[in-house]
Image 1: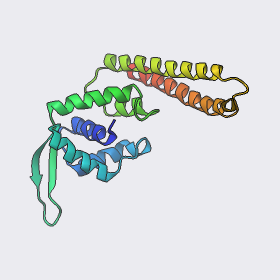
Image 2 (image 1 turned 90 degrees about the vertical axis):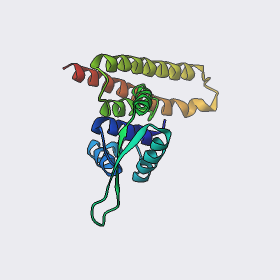
Image 3 (image 1 turned 45 degrees about the vertical axis):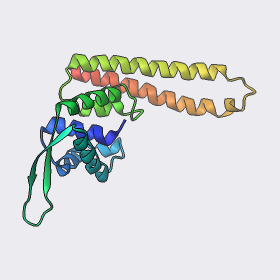
Image 4 (image 1 turned 90 degrees about the horizontal axis):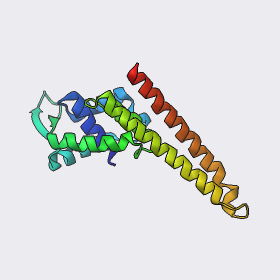
Amino acid sequence: MNVAKFVVLGTLDQLISGSGYDIIRELDKKMISRWTNVKKGSIYNALKVLAKEGHILETERLKQGSFPTMTLYKITESGQKLFDTLQAQAFLGLYPYYFGFKIALKFNSRLSPAQIHKYADQAVKIIDAIIAGMEMYLASISKSDPRSKTDPFFIEHDKMLLRQEKKWIQMAMDRLDG
């Protein structure tokens, strides 16, 4: 998943119209840098690529004094479809591994609570399947295998993170219902 495209589309979907500067300001407000490493240059590059691909549309150019020209964009119907696809991937935790659901929820502006619950249920099933796969792998390692000395330690950490993510998703659904 291209996270820069996702956050640009998600922000424009929420703002209706905005410039690169507006998008960066919104991302700062949402503290997205805590969960991604999307840089300002990536935002401007994503704007160019998304415009070229027809997912966003340049609506206006503003010039104020000696400041650079500001270009305003809005999301197109194909941009909304692409955003919906990327949001579904994020809700299912496919990228980034542990914070996908959180980022998808932060940028949600059109999905109903019932639709979000379906993604939450799917995400929890995926987490459970990953944990089960880890446990099967650990059970398959013989004591004489050199991996038996290190892998369990690292896998236990991953399982702890996944269990915590599952707990957070369940808390988010409780909050959505409350």
